[in-house]
Length: 312
Image (cartoon, rainbow, N blue to C red; front, side):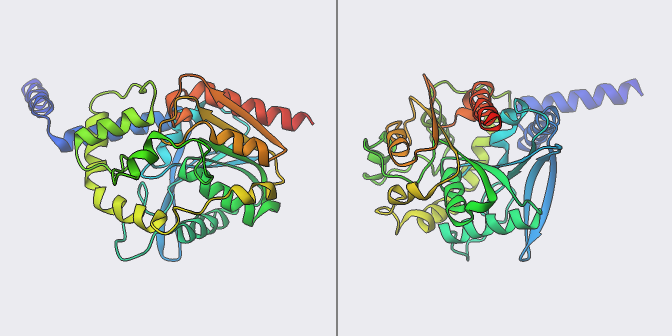
């Protein structure tokens, strides 16, 4: 038996040192399982119109919070953030169509109408009636559209470096887009490194082999992500929600990374000017995804907003 165990560890060590992708993926998935477990998040799926969608759920006896990720990201963007929310909240974190564990359907147009409608149907299928909704980047845009379409169901809207408005100052990302360069569509490990630099001011620690596994996932999805980007934004570059923000009558939480290179921090002035009932936080020395870069601090700001609202 000792010889068998010794042989097993020799084989395992050899695979690790050789960089075997399947072993690296297994280690990464186990680490992800542990991270979800530490946040009391259970992996679940739901079927909507014949499509299977994955989501994470933390049970709670109080109000429900629905969280949406950004473009080319997934539900796991919120794992550590959820850890710092009060245990009374029920938290539901969705994979949107074309993201995470959702099917990559090259034959279907993943435009904003389709994704927003699908998110609404997923929420309905989970019997969530009245709730808080929050989203990062593209997820913020979807959250805003849902709040405009179904205001009676929304307690509060949370926007984490949200897409959807025309910024007073063009970001570095949009300057690159004008030149035909999209850092969000990753085609190599080197481009993944650039994406990480774009997303974060100070990159969060990712244990080995997480970075390599994530880079491969982004590269493998590059063709679909390019198609999805075209579906979403090719005919919408001149459209924004600036003129509709005043329709948001629910309390709105807005948080932005001061050093966001994708969506400029000057976006916050548009929200403040157009939404009277808004709570704005700018996080110093932070990038595009506060809930990933500094989850404890971002969750503290969001929790303070919810507490103040509950005390009114």
